[in-house]
Image (tube, rainbow, N blue to C red):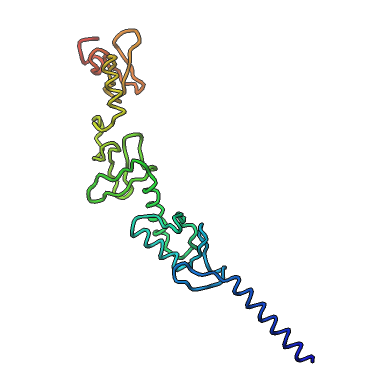
Length: 210
């Protein structure tokens, strides 16, 4: 009797262990293999992935230049355990996501480069500095930066210039900002400290209006 009872106890323990093991198993959405949930990775939707299959999914997404999605939900690459892909891949993938989410994207005007320029590399409202090759690109026309020359594609500047022309405002010969004279003589001193003539916008004392 004692031996039979012990055998029954062991049988129940084995069955319970097997039940717990099955309950903890999760099926990979790609390979369909089942593993313990501590080994598997659950993404934002109800699906689970093997680490290797999830890494492959991100690699395919980068190759196809699109974010990895499951059940139409974007899966952040932070779900991937450390060490599954090299750090430079993580950087390239995150840069792709930033590119796809950036409105009015700017690309390097260097034809041998043409890299996406992230917003952190914008220098004021007009210039984008490429991290890859160092070229400066006009954010309005996507041509090489043209300092000292208005961009015809910059609609905001063109509207301001049209208003300035209608109001008789002058442009500082130093910083090119519009200046309006309220009263006083024609000797103007801009915020950039450039002195110029309000009649002809020439540098002060280089014309005959002084």
